[in-house]
Each structure stands twice: as C-alpha cells, then as structure tokens.
Length: 250
Ligand code: 6GU
Image 1 (cartoon, protein in one colour):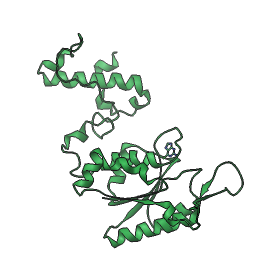
Image 2: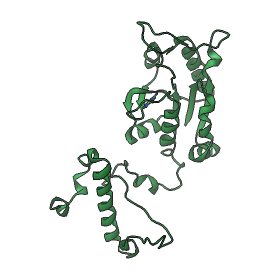
Image 3: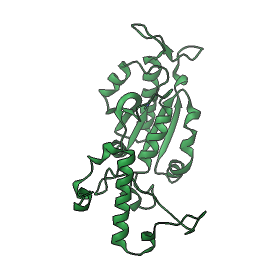
Image 4: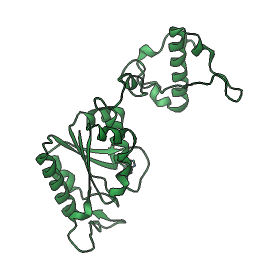
C-alpha cells in the first residue's frame, strides 16, 4: 500500500517510522510519503489559510495550495506506478472511524491523507477530488482535536495492521474486539501471564485447568461482563449466538 500525507506539520507524522507501521515500511509492505503543504503556498509568508466567507471565527485552508499539493502528490504516485487512490480527509464532521471502515480502507492500494488545521479546508477541494476518486471524510471520535494529524496516525495504524503479512499471526485479527465472528462486538476480557502470584494476587483458576471448553466459556463471560460495563450500546449489536439460555436466566 502507498500512503501520501499532505500536512503543515510533517514532523507530526514522525511516529509513522516506529513500531508496527515502521516495520511494515521497512519490510516494503507500506510506502509512506509525507509532504509539507507550505511547499505549495504562493506567497513569501507561506500562507495556506484565509478568513471564512460569511464571517465567523477561525481560518479556512485555501483551495490553491491544497489543489496543487494533491495534484503533485497524485502525479508523483501515478508516476511511481501506484493506482486507484482514495482521498481521506480527517474531520470531526466525518463518518465515524470503525474497524469496518479500517478494513474498507485497507482494500485500497493507495491512500492520500489531507489533515486540516484551523476550521477545515475550503469545501470545493473535496468536491473537486470526489469527481476523480473515492473521498472519505472520517472522524475518529466525538471530541475535537486541533487538527487531523493525530487522526492520520490512528487511521494508518489501524489500516496497516490489516495489510497482508504485517501482523505475524493471522489469528491475531480473529480475536480483536471488533473483528467479525461470533465474538463480534464483545470487548476483550482480562488477560494474564506469568508469574502465577504477584503481590498476593493469583490468576483465575480456570485458566490453569487445561479445560478448553471451560476456558472459552469463562472468556466469553468476562468479555460480556466488560462489554455491559463499558459499552452497553454494543451488547444489542452482538450476534445472538453469543448468548445462551443461562444468560437469559441471569
Ligand atoms: Cl479526524 N479531526 C479533528 N480535528 N478532530 C477530530 C477528529 C478529526 N476526529 C475526532 N475529532
């Protein structure tokens, strides 16, 4: 997968050199290019924003630098042999980012991110690129960030770990809290490792029993308990096969 990021804070994307995403890049599974939007500014102050039409607070990012930056990043990518780009615009007014959307984005061979600062990008920019490619306006949650760069980090990490060969073990996806399957929409329960005693605390005895059926049942119970406590909204989205007669008698 190729990823281009156009930003006024290229150094904000430094974490993409670390950990899973950094390793995916080193392994040649991910090609990340970060571009400084100010390279496409038109004046000696490197201005990329202006006051909003209709008035109001804050500044709006201008069409000119964004259009030229995206055109150049796209031309460079096509030149390098990339194809079928999708534009991802992080914004608190976007569609909620979910595991399902991460999977959808991971199916694109090329993502171009346009994170905004200030009050956002002039809407004609997304309107323009929508005529040429899929455009995803994405929000990573119901809170307001100072800009979309942190969202680029979040989205890139969630997408990269779904790419073939990036996670060592295909099983690792299967048990994800939001992965499709019988446990879909149940949060993961507690986990333990050695030593068996720590500060007077042991581990649940069932995990030492070697009884795989009982262990699976215990894990499901704990997952359900945690989901009811932390995300009651998810419980009604669970597959009915998750529940049995014993649950209904509770
Ligand atoms: Cl994608 N951007 C900003 N600025 N704030 C957000 C967000 C994105 N998602 C949630 N809040």
